[in-house]
Image 1 (cartoon, one colour):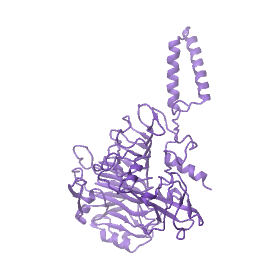
Image 2 (cartoon, helix red, strand yellow; image 1 turned 135 degrees about the vertical axis):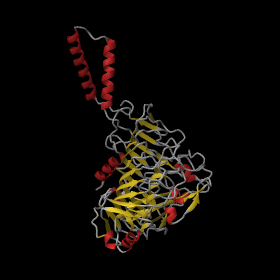
Image 3 (tube, rainbow, N blue to C red; image 1 turned 30 degrees about the horizontal axis):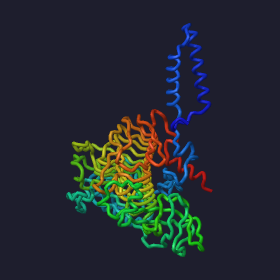
Image 4 (spheres, rainbow, N blue to C red; image 1 turned 60 degrees about the horizontal axis):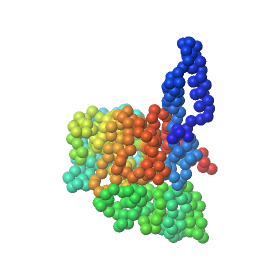
Length: 538
């Protein structure tokens, strides 16, 4: 093992054979011996070429997960997305069409009422949006399970929004610094998928447990059954011990954070020991569990699940972007309080913000952004938030940013276990918005230029931008990256990042494994972990 580069015995044998063959041929053609210096130079060239061909294998995972354990610093991200990756996204078959309810789709007629009527009268059904351009001037709210909207393609079925949300339903607020702004600057969407989760406590946790554990002792098992999916919830103390833990005891200034830090974790019960009042579940704990954080068990269900929005375009006016916190709500979508929903194959054009997700196990797949707006002058961006993942175990995959947002991909308050994978951008940034977000993954992503990978927002004294166990795996860019000092605690993982810096592999400190012109295997950590989990599941 040389650093984190695995070099096999066979490789060295092949290298030496190549070297001797080259030396013989060179001597024959030039009737001269190769000097020792020339031989050393040749060896260096061969080693560098071979090193570039040999994949980077991280000690955190190995070739196929053989080096990984649930207690290690590398979280298990395989549970992200629709039904925790156990099911593919469903194939939708339309039951009716918006044209059945009077939609014109001519790009001029206001089709809002027709869409709202279709949604209200088609609970649990899939509504087709045929090719055309549909003018929408109000919220389209989905609040029933199984009600979906399907177009004919992201460029064929286009929803056109001539005015912002703040004109539809004014919602003024203030920034963390007190400046007046619309709350749609960081929330809301014309298409809103809205649900709620039961808050009734089914049991309290009665004993501490370590990260990676697969069981919990509880106060009561009478309201629990094998097969139930439960939500573990924990809240911070006045002493902010939960926030400090999630920041690996390196939180930075947290005076304004107070005791707002929360942890949420979903798992399925596989066994109940009634005598011991213990439940066993199907996935390892993402964090420690301590009684001081008042851990409790509730149902993981949401009032709204199985809603899909797919094969649609979202078009907003080509108005100049005026800058940070000036946004009035040219926002495409918002998921709130939902679970096991999805958005697939969407084109979002000229938006202030794209998609806000506050829920669990939501999948966003095939999302494209572009813009023809005149950019804000200082940062040359055309909008505020691209994608925001503020829940748990959500999956963003197959995305493309052909424009710049102030914050391209955001994790924030309560964000944990989210995955961004298999995407690209012009000059992407991973915005970590403080509030003890932790254990999220970015993998197999091409940043583009790479001048602002860690550019992040969030108010002051709310903790460092990122919490512990944040993982960046196979992140490519034209500009080299370095460890973002002060951005988060040392307990983060950066593996396969474009960089010329030296590797740092401190089990209890920083973990930084640069690519250096090699390919990382596996390229997509999420897919590798999901494959391993499925192969090991009976």
